[in-house]
Image 1 (cartoon, rainbow, N blue to C red):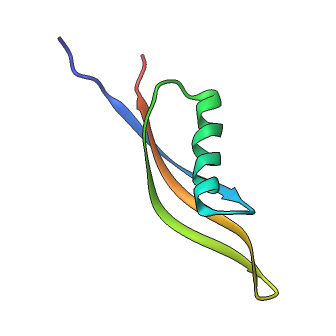
Image 2: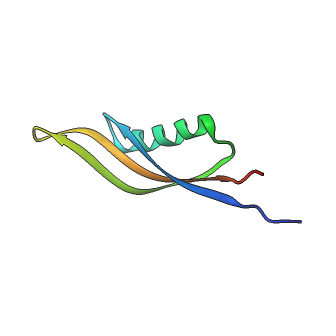
Length: 69
């Protein structure tokens, strides 16, 4: 029996409200076109600032999914 193989891609999700929402947006959008998502790991969090105020939360997310032939 052969083992499984997984591919890892990096995504950046954004949100006006939180880093959690930004990460969730990235994973859920990826799930619309990728099959068999397995693990999501947040690798970086940052914010966009305009006029001294936070306008956008961004989450860089590594997502793995099962490799299909």
